[in-house]
Image 1 (cartoon, rainbow, N blue to C red):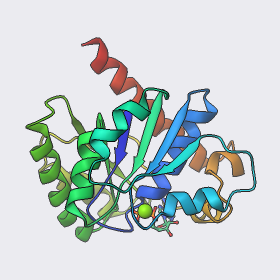
Image 2 (cartoon, helix red, strand yellow):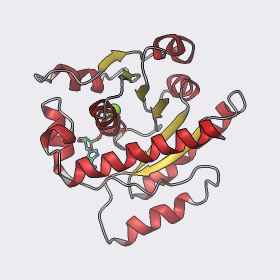
Image 3 (cartoon, rainbow, N blue to C red):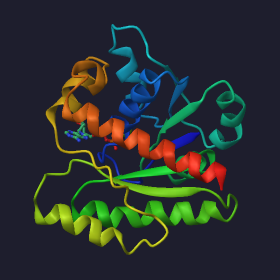
Length: 215
Ligand SMILES: Nc1ncnc2c1ncn2[C@@H]1O[C@H](COP(=O)(O)OP(=O)(O)O)[C@@H](O)[C@H]1O
Ligand SMILES: [Mg+2]
């Protein structure tokens, strides 16, 4: 399975979600590759900051030809997670075309909802070439029991083909703190709330993919 974590907007949590998902899949025993498709190289920096043994491989591939090159490399892995680049449409398009599932992080903010429209448009464009490409939203930095938290799910309902996954990540300092040491939340606090919510997201993505394969 190739999961593209993508949004045309920066700062929504692509890298945070990509490294933590990759770590969670790897800890569950899967062979995982994390592709840094952002020229900024944040996932590579995360990996360079790490002293601990690597849980998975990280490669930099910020290329408009990613969709052509990745299938061959992906064969050696059970899960590939792409950390996408914001803004640059050629890179976004290549990453979307390379993916089986595109995960779009959205923060509970009107700016993120407006920006989501652009990523959705790229997905719809790509679906003309790749019919079974799937897009899903994940709410990131959710703050419990706020009106804006509820509004965001409602506002995303306008994108009919792209469901909001029932597995949100909340606003938690551990996401930033763990990244500084090149670690995942799962390694810093294996039984913490953050590790649990990332595990729920990983499980949901895996189940959805298995169901699709069976269909
Ligand atoms: N759920 C979260 N809780 C707290 N901080 C977060 C969360 N998700 C992301 N961040 C922080 O927000 C900033 C942007 O996240 P990042 O993953 O780099 O976004 P992107 O890759 O989309 O640009 C980083 O400083 C990151 O640590
Ligand atoms: Mg990033």
